[in-house]
Structures are given as structure tokens and as C-alpha cells.
Image (cartoon, rainbow, N blue to C red):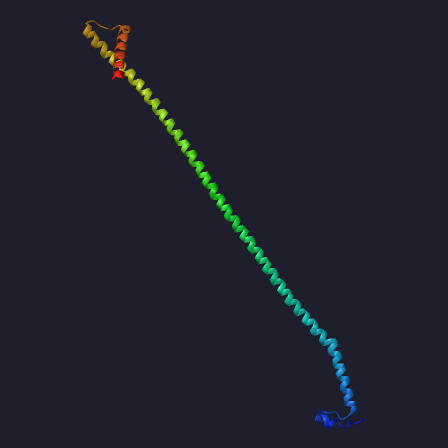
Length: 179
């Protein structure tokens, strides 16, 4: 072994004493460098790449989730607007239907009142005719009796009595219409 001379002065107590130590140190350093280059650095590179991929994947998932949330919000807003439009259309339809129903009810009520009025008028006319017939009979009977008492003879002949009654009632109607 060949000692190193002068290296002691430069490096102090850390200086190697023999050249073999220097060569062994260089070889060991090369071996450690090769191990680091072949094993440790690829492991670190792989771990770094995995971390980068996870971070990028997380960012991509977050961006996708954000886009999905924005799409869902847009769809929700579209559905909300469609629901509002539908509600407005339903309200408008309800207004139109209520107006139609109201018009039909008014028309029906008008027709019903006309029918009731016509029925009432017909009934009144029938009652009036019946009363006129009854009144003609009673007035005719009284007029015949009275005329018989005035004339002094019996007016029991039905045909003569009917002519007298008709003439008397005709005179009453013309007198009533002139007033």
C-alpha cells in the first residue's frame, strides 16, 4: 500500500492514508451512484409520476364534476322555466275554461228563465181563459136571470140565452177597451 503524502496537510484528519482507500472510495461511490441511478431514481420517478397523475386525475374529476354540476343546474333552470311556463299556460286555460263555463251558465240560466217565463205566461193564459170561461158562465147565468126578470119572460132557451150573453160580454169588452 502506497501512502499518500501531503494530503494530510490539506484535508486534516479526514484525509485518506493510502491510495487504495481513495480508489475503494471512488469505486464505492460509483456503485452507490449506479444503484441510485438504476433503483432509487426510477422509484422516485414512478412515485412522482403517480402523484402527478393522481393530482391531474383529481383535477380532471373536479372539472368533470363541476361541468356536470353546471349541466345539472342548467337542466334544473330549464325545467323550472318549463314548469313556470306550464303553470302560466294552465292558469290561462283555467281562465278560459272559467269564462266558457260562466258564459254557458249564463246562457243556460237565460234559457231556463225564458222557459220559466214562457211556461208562466202559458199557465197565466190558460188560467185567464179558464177564468173568462167561468166568468162568462156565471155572468151569463146572472144576465139571463136578470134579463128574464126585466123582460118578464123566461129565457131558458139555451140558444137565445147564449146570444144574449155573448152580446152582453161583447159590449162589456168594448166598454173596457175604450177606457
